[in-house]
Picture (cartoon, rainbow, N blue to C red):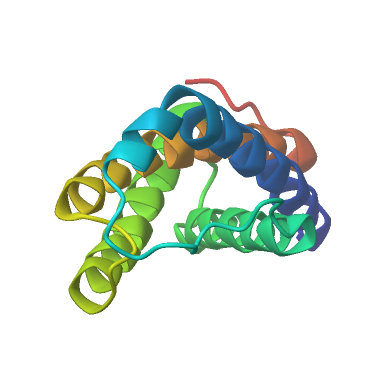
Length: 143
């Protein structure tokens, strides 16, 4: 995979990671997270520091892209979705369980549900990243 394609995939992927995260966490499941917060108070930033959230989205997309590029060969929408879903699930299962075990930010319910929502976000993002990688390499990215 060429580096130009990887950079484009990371940039587009970061936008998708951010947008899908907004839809899932700030709209659809916002009340779930509010109802299942841990006992810590005053931990949410309002307004959020957007540059930091965007850099985090960039890192997330870079991790998915890196995992795809390490596999060798061409990527498809299906393999991209699978890679992104696995990366998202494992990344956030790690974070959520460590946070649950060491802080009062989230309750156990959030630690158990959040990785599955990240499975969805990572999968969608991975599919889009695979599409961009395929387009940039000139190969087909069909399912």
